[in-house]
Image (cartoon, rainbow, N blue to C red; front, side, top):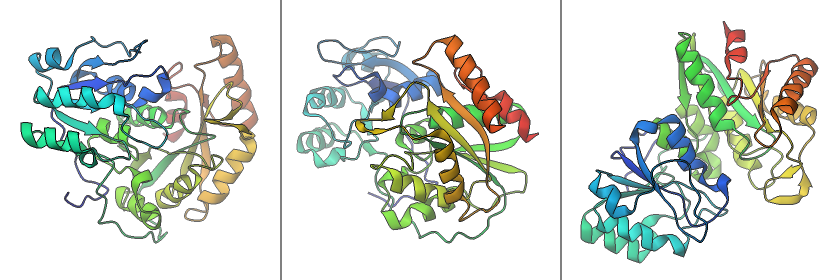
Length: 341
């Protein structure tokens, strides 16, 4: 595999058939959901298995049906703990290969490490895209002050809306005429944007340097809107979150959290952090590479509470912390972007 940099363009053939796996965890298919939400024109259909197949609302197609309709790439549009290719998925992948589709994955386990997938791809002349792998040409971070301005999403936990928030902010800024770019740091964001770096697959010493490369010196009025990963309060992923923060050198952080979630994802023995403690620690850590960093807004994911509860909670947090509090899926992000004018 050729060495990749933080700005490598990923050339995936469109349209896509999105694979949702064989389980029932709707949060596990955030890659598929994200691609469909932000790039719907390239999504031809979905395929899933198991006794109770889940759906994101696309037409349900078999690999053969999708191929006949012109699908070019079969996207493993889901994530699991450990990032492995479940043996249950392999027949679906093989069938897609036999139908002439390339395979794209953002998982930790490389597709070409699975003999039957590698052999099938070679036999049928299709390409295996391991989006998360191959970053071998990165340098360590320096912490040197860079020109341009940067917004970073941080969170109380994983899967609280950091990618959605930054995509929404970047789109709103562009609509308002800002010189702004979304910078992807995870597999879903990379597949949506076409470039970026899967920062959790980078050797630890090069995390901050990889982000410095992703968000280099720029025009004084240019904004990089940087997708966050993990949380300083999640013991599984805090190291990635810290390296990303130092490399981002953010001028503004957006704190993301999910209302009604009382423990760290997958770790019921660890309670969700106090929001004020979380904000203060993130600001303290970010100040190492940008002493002027500030809290710019709070993105509150209200998917599991009522609209009335969400409205009340947003008002309370906005008053308490003195910054806009929004739910990008309900209220949009204009209230925050307007503060940048």
